[in-house]
Amino acid sequence: IIESINGSQAEGSSEVVNAAASTDRHLATLETENRHRQFGCFLELLALSEVRKQLSSVAAANYDNSWVDDADVDSIGSILAENEDAGLEQEYAVAARMLRPLLTWCRVIEMDIVEEIAPQLDSPSAWHGGKNIACNESEGAIEVSAEMQVRGGAGGDGIVRKMIKSGSGVEFRTLRLGDGGETSMVVLFSKNEAVQWLLNHSVEDTEEGALRRLDEMEDARVIESVDLKLLAPKAYKKGKQTAEEKEDGAVEDEKLKGIRYRLVDPWEVEPLESREAETRGAALGRHRFLAFGLGKVTASCEALFRSLGGSPLLELWAASNGGVSLTKAVATVHAPWERDAGGDLQLKSGIPVEPEPFDNGIRQHLYRNALFRRLGLPQRFMALIQVELLDLKNLTSPGGSLSMTAYALLRLKRPNSKAPLTMKARTLDSVATHPTKLGKATGPNAPASWGSLVRFRFPLPEETAPDGRSYDNDREVLFKGPPSVLQLSVYEKKFMSDTLLGGADVKLDGLSSGGQLEEWVPLRTDAHGINWFARIRLTLRFELMCLSTEKEKQDLEELAPSVGYRRIQQLSGLGGLHEDVRKSVSTPDLLSYFESMVY
View 1 (cartoon, rainbow, N blue to C red):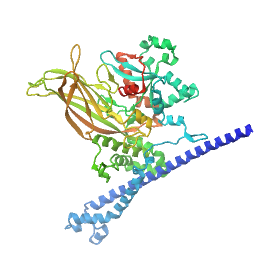
View 2 (cartoon, helix red, strand yellow):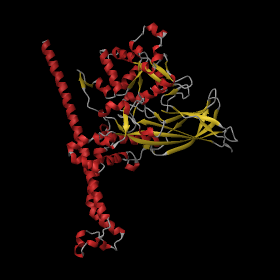
View 3 (spheres, rainbow, N blue to C red):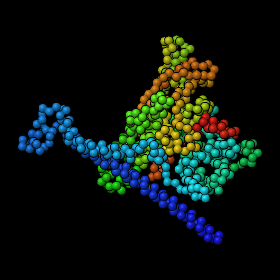
């Protein structure tokens, strides 16, 4: 009886596996058919557009008909020099009559292709870039396997969210980088403690499974490995066991190896040192990005073209600049909620409202990224914010500004972040301008010319809806929305100790895509209130990049190095590192602590 029961269970299990495999193949087939239909429509439109260009040139050309016999004039066409008295309107009418059938044909294909490439927002499946998933069957339900959740990037944030709870056994500590005068901080947790947590909470049954789970989270860039022994081998070798660890008997193998993890924000911000760095490849947020190139676009759909029409279709794509046409079409499309696209007027309590320009710019390009993702193309937009520090004015000096040397600390953050921004407590994504000598200016409250410039960039995460919310609820709780506030602290450089002139939080709500925002910002200090004002100019742009592919995986460490880890290496090389041993007290405190740091 037992053998028959076991045999029945084995047969049922194999049937489930076969059904899941069949479903995967069916979904893959449907995805391939969808791409064939989408690109088939676009290629048909592309070919007709090329014909339209040629016929338009024929219709609009001025011919030298000296070689034409009078008897053959009518056979040439309706637009010839014989109609020398015809005006522009008549010539336009004749040309339009020739091209109208072709133009109508093109317009019909354009309307047909819109639903294929850019469906309405009321179909969430069109935007959720989900992958084929494996299933586990139980008596009560069929569930998505936890392994596949983490592998897809979803689920890893849920594990982290549970780890940060009070009493979880995972300590989150601050790593201080740099010397005593300039210190940056990052929050880390031990790999060994993470393995023990996975085993204690029955997420994995074996240590090998726990290590594999962490590797998958690292591949999905939910977490990133930081080896303290490699960063500072001499300092770490001399490190002694703390009294607290001695009490717990916690001489852990992994701690001795120095392996730590930092959490990776999907909206991770990178300060840029030059304009050339705007298109530099980098591992930023949860993905690796490379500079945009038409070759990458063609390579991403080469197999598709060969299956549709072979080499002649590839030649047509190259000759007609299909990659440029498709990229421009998607990069300039209007989102369906915009008035320019015929969207409805948005109302709140019966009053017409419009989204803030900054939020609308982010939503526009999230929508366009969703279109690229739907087509299986590597192009992705990345946000770039440029900050120009123009002038500095002192209200307490009516005779004009005094000669001084000033610099500023800047950082992009979320509205509720309470992170400090000082030289002794900075985050990894903050940047300091070079000290600039400001000349003495005369006149009533005359400002001193400054002239410093800072650039930031951050990705628009995958698995994010066009409204900016993540499809993963755990990720949305931990990392809610893009950074939308510029944090600014201005200092006067002095010999012994620098003096804080004031700080400010500048909201980016009024900053539109491709636009500028210029204003005088009051700088406030706790002791003296507002005495100084800084004039700043903000610019928002979106740069087109390409996601890395599996073919480029071997060279990614050189082509797209991790921004956060590279910054940690630089700072540890300049001033060393020190790991705090303070434990977190409770979940709310730790969440607040996380929001104050770069993970």
